[in-house]
Length: 340
Image 1 (cartoon, rainbow, N blue to C red):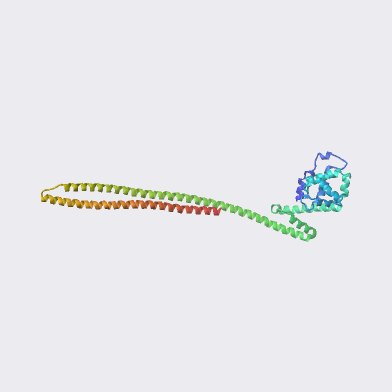
Image 2 (cartoon, rainbow, N blue to C red):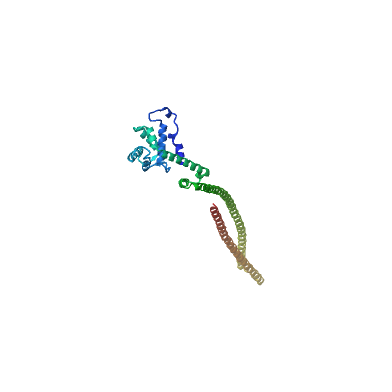
């Protein structure tokens, strides 16, 4: 397959309309390139796409060149000195090399390539084409990254154990069929999983939005309840303060009357008795007023304590509700991250 791709991609192997116009004693340029390409295949039996110095020795016996001359040819063609020659470098440079020799190129090509070698190269090309067709039928290029190992095994069976080749190809057909089915199933499962994850994300997002709205609603309700309770206590506190003020004014009036009565002296016993009775009544009234004042003060203190306690409870309740809602929010976020 790789050789076919290289052969198809090599512009030097395609017919050039302008080259047909050039005639010379050494033959056409297309023949030179074709023979150079054939020599490259003899050197690159592994199908690497390039040849090294030792690969050139495979041309020994194919061309009228000794090993030393082949090494010199390699050094001449290796213009960049990287120790390897690509197909383009080899065909271009080797064509120039052959054109520059004294022997006619036709003679070199006719005497250089043995018939058995030609048959071997042709058979190798046919085997490569058969293997490439097999891989295309199996759709292996979408699954295998490297076909070299399988290619070596296929060539070995075809050459040494041809009776097992059909079983091997049938086995490959089943294996690649199962691999394609597994790949299709994997793609289906991935698509289903993606859809399920998308649905889970939407559901979690919906739950998250509902929880956010619930948290907001609970906060608003709690704030309204505490505000209503606070206003009620403040109203009671104002009323008790007014009542306390009234009792204080009444006590002042009674104190004033007591002082006035003490300063008034009556000459008669009846008047003194009346005064004592009145004074006693005033004292009793003052005592009752004092008790009511004390009671009112105690109630005021109780209301103030209740207001303070309610404020503290409000702050504690707000903190508790906020903490609970935050924990629920963090829990939902963790579930969302876990599902993603």
